[in-house]
Amino acid sequence: MPEGGLAIQTRGLTKVFGRQTVVNGIDLSVPRGSVFGFLGPNGSGKTTSIRMLLGLASATSGEITVLGQQMPKRAGTVLPRVGALIEGPGFYPFLSGTANLRRLDSADRFARTSTRTARVGEALERVGLTHAAGKKVRAYSLGMKQRLGIANALLTPRDLIVLDEPTNGLDPQGTREVRNLVRSLTAEGTTVFVSSHLLAEIEQMCTHAAVMRAGNLVAQGSLDELRQAGQSRVRVLTPDPGPARRVLAELGLAVEVDADGRETHPLDGESVTAPLDAGNWVDGPIDAGTRTDRPLDPERIVAALVAAGVRVRGFAVERASLEDLFVALTGEGFDVAQ
Image (cartoon, rainbow, N blue to C red):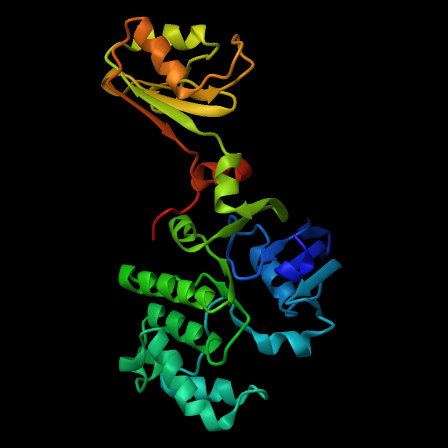
């Protein structure tokens, strides 16, 4: 994709602390107008990368382009067009939500004084805090403080919004509101860069994503591209697990047993998962080169099972989830619910 189509681009971005390489030569490409999810286990280098993107930390080596401008060289031009919530919001606890936003807005030399009151009120309304605008922030819940931080990022129109864990501490309703808010921002042409550990939220909110592991960028692309990079599965329900296993073996598929003791059948290519009787499963990817002269498609698998007398009670093709891909890439689990 040409640079004009990217809100953020890095080349060989590296950060070294002493002898430890925290970010290792990453090439990040964030399309304009996207909601881009930045994923990775704790300590994978996400926050350090974000801090370098915004000029809050210097890079050891590499290049950074944000909104078509080099960073940090052009920070004075770029940052007024960027709203950010990094590492949680920080506010004066003895001031109200409105007073906090007014102080933060007054620190922005590009912000218009004449429209401050209206802009603060609109930002509070967009994040659902109008009812608490006059309340002291020390009385705010964590979720309310999080939403106030997002309101600060929205005080003036932005071309890029960077949010670090934007749904942290929010209840389900607040999470839905933030999700809808992010979608409304992209509808206005704003690019939103979201770092999060809540995989379910990334899948519902984002159009693109990147995965970090131990300072390395191990995958990036649209969500559809990332899912296709994982292994799909076919699921078969049958009261005849033995004959089903034999048919799958004849198709070149070897049976395995998963951690729950259920029989699974991994394939190499398009995958299949097959639950048999009483919780037994046959799973696996279909390899077009295994003992067949043409690809094993789902119809062919079902036909082979039926021809062998296997009673097929259910059959489904399951695409690999983003969680499956994350675990395969990082070797670690991931929070999938709040």
